[in-house]
Image 1: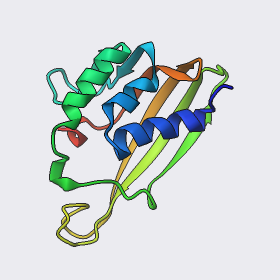
Image 2 (image 1 turned 120 degrees about the horizontal axis):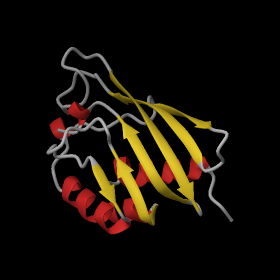
Image 3 (image 1 turned 120 degrees about the vertical axis):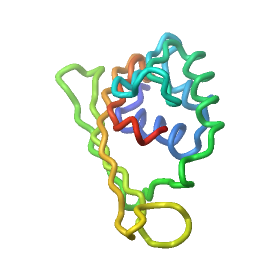
Image 4 (image 1 turned 30 degrees about the vertical axis):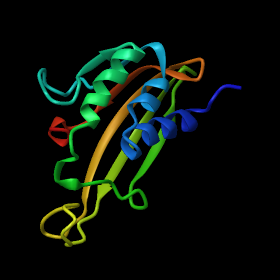
Length: 145
Protein backbone atom coordinates (compact mmCIF):
# COMPACT_ATOMS: atom_id res chain seq x y z
CA UNK A 1 0.00 0.00 0.00
CA UNK A 2 1.46 3.33 -1.09
CA UNK A 3 1.67 6.22 1.35
CA UNK A 4 -0.24 9.41 0.64
CA UNK A 5 1.47 12.78 0.22
CA UNK A 6 0.08 13.77 3.64
CA UNK A 7 1.61 10.69 5.29
CA UNK A 8 4.96 11.27 3.58
CA UNK A 9 5.00 14.97 4.49
CA UNK A 10 3.92 14.47 8.11
CA UNK A 11 6.46 11.66 8.58
CA UNK A 12 9.21 13.89 7.21
CA UNK A 13 8.24 16.80 9.50
CA UNK A 14 7.98 14.53 12.55
CA UNK A 15 11.41 12.97 11.90
CA UNK A 16 13.09 16.32 11.19
CA UNK A 17 11.48 19.26 12.96
CA UNK A 18 9.71 17.50 15.83
CA UNK A 19 12.16 14.79 16.92
CA UNK A 20 15.37 15.79 15.07
CA UNK A 21 15.95 12.08 14.39
CA UNK A 22 18.44 11.76 11.54
CA UNK A 23 17.89 8.00 11.22
CA UNK A 24 14.13 8.37 10.82
CA UNK A 25 14.59 11.32 8.49
CA UNK A 26 17.02 9.40 6.27
CA UNK A 27 14.67 6.41 6.14
CA UNK A 28 11.97 8.64 4.64
CA UNK A 29 14.19 8.95 1.53
CA UNK A 30 14.90 6.41 -1.18
CA UNK A 31 18.40 4.94 -1.05
CA UNK A 32 19.48 7.34 -3.82
CA UNK A 33 17.32 10.22 -2.53
CA UNK A 34 18.40 13.83 -2.88
CA UNK A 35 17.82 16.64 -0.38
CA UNK A 36 18.39 20.19 -1.62
CA UNK A 37 18.09 23.58 0.06
CA UNK A 38 18.93 25.81 -2.95
CA UNK A 39 18.76 29.11 -1.06
CA UNK A 40 21.33 28.08 1.56
CA UNK A 41 24.76 29.52 0.74
CA UNK A 42 27.75 27.23 0.30
CA UNK A 43 29.60 26.65 3.56
CA UNK A 44 26.55 27.25 5.80
CA UNK A 45 25.96 25.03 8.84
CA UNK A 46 22.79 23.64 7.25
CA UNK A 47 23.54 21.34 4.31
CA UNK A 48 22.77 22.70 0.87
CA UNK A 49 22.72 19.42 -1.09
CA UNK A 50 22.86 15.83 0.10
CA UNK A 51 22.82 12.79 -2.17
CA UNK A 52 21.91 9.34 -0.92
CA UNK A 53 20.23 8.13 2.24
CA UNK A 54 23.52 7.60 4.09
CA UNK A 55 24.81 11.10 3.32
CA UNK A 56 21.47 12.52 4.47
CA UNK A 57 21.73 10.48 7.68
CA UNK A 58 25.31 11.59 8.45
CA UNK A 59 24.89 15.26 7.59
CA UNK A 60 21.60 15.70 9.42
CA UNK A 61 22.89 13.85 12.50
CA UNK A 62 25.79 16.31 12.62
CA UNK A 63 23.42 19.25 12.13
CA UNK A 64 20.99 18.02 14.81
CA UNK A 65 23.84 17.82 17.35
CA UNK A 66 23.97 21.63 17.33
CA UNK A 67 21.69 23.39 19.80
CA UNK A 68 18.57 25.06 18.43
CA UNK A 69 19.16 28.82 18.00
CA UNK A 70 17.68 30.68 20.98
CA UNK A 71 15.97 27.51 22.15
CA UNK A 72 13.10 28.29 19.82
CA UNK A 73 10.66 25.71 18.61
CA UNK A 74 7.51 25.96 16.52
CA UNK A 75 4.03 26.24 17.95
CA UNK A 76 2.33 23.43 16.06
CA UNK A 77 -1.16 24.52 17.15
CA UNK A 78 -0.68 27.88 15.41
CA UNK A 79 1.37 26.60 12.45
CA UNK A 80 -0.17 25.19 9.33
CA UNK A 81 0.42 23.80 5.89
CA UNK A 82 -1.36 23.12 2.63
CA UNK A 83 -0.38 20.30 0.31
CA UNK A 84 -0.81 20.83 -3.42
CA UNK A 85 -0.95 17.91 -5.79
CA UNK A 86 0.32 18.34 -9.33
CA UNK A 87 -0.41 16.80 -12.71
CA UNK A 88 2.51 14.45 -11.97
CA UNK A 89 1.28 11.92 -9.37
CA UNK A 90 4.84 11.59 -8.03
CA UNK A 91 5.18 15.31 -7.21
CA UNK A 92 3.50 17.38 -4.51
CA UNK A 93 4.20 20.78 -3.00
CA UNK A 94 3.98 21.76 0.66
CA UNK A 95 3.20 25.39 1.45
CA UNK A 96 4.10 25.93 5.11
CA UNK A 97 3.62 28.70 7.66
CA UNK A 98 5.50 27.92 10.87
CA UNK A 99 4.66 30.09 13.88
CA UNK A 100 7.07 30.78 16.72
CA UNK A 101 5.30 32.16 19.80
CA UNK A 102 5.87 35.75 20.82
CA UNK A 103 4.48 35.18 24.30
CA UNK A 104 6.96 37.45 26.03
CA UNK A 105 8.29 34.87 28.47
CA UNK A 106 11.92 33.91 28.91
CA UNK A 107 11.85 30.74 26.81
CA UNK A 108 13.61 32.40 23.88
CA UNK A 109 10.73 31.64 21.54
CA UNK A 110 9.17 34.30 19.36
CA UNK A 111 9.96 37.93 18.83
CA UNK A 112 11.37 40.16 21.57
CA UNK A 113 8.35 42.48 21.34
CA UNK A 114 5.90 39.66 22.11
CA UNK A 115 4.69 39.26 18.52
CA UNK A 116 4.45 35.82 16.95
CA UNK A 117 7.04 35.20 14.26
CA UNK A 118 5.72 33.49 11.12
CA UNK A 119 8.18 31.75 8.85
CA UNK A 120 6.85 30.78 5.42
CA UNK A 121 8.47 28.21 3.17
CA UNK A 122 7.82 25.89 0.25
CA UNK A 123 8.96 22.32 -0.23
CA UNK A 124 8.71 20.34 -3.46
CA UNK A 125 8.60 16.57 -3.03
CA UNK A 126 9.23 13.96 -5.73
CA UNK A 127 8.31 10.51 -4.45
CA UNK A 128 9.02 6.97 -5.56
CA UNK A 129 7.54 3.85 -3.97
CA UNK A 130 6.23 5.81 -0.99
CA UNK A 131 9.58 7.45 -0.17
CA UNK A 132 11.13 10.81 -0.98
CA UNK A 133 13.30 10.57 -4.09
CA UNK A 134 14.03 14.32 -4.18
CA UNK A 135 13.13 17.16 -1.87
CA UNK A 136 13.77 20.81 -2.68
CA UNK A 137 13.34 22.93 0.45
CA UNK A 138 13.00 26.68 -0.13
CA UNK A 139 13.36 28.75 3.04
CA UNK A 140 15.28 31.77 4.31
CA UNK A 141 18.82 30.54 5.08
CA UNK A 142 19.14 32.83 8.13
CA UNK A 143 16.69 30.53 9.90
CA UNK A 144 19.22 27.72 10.24
CA UNK A 145 22.49 29.51 10.99
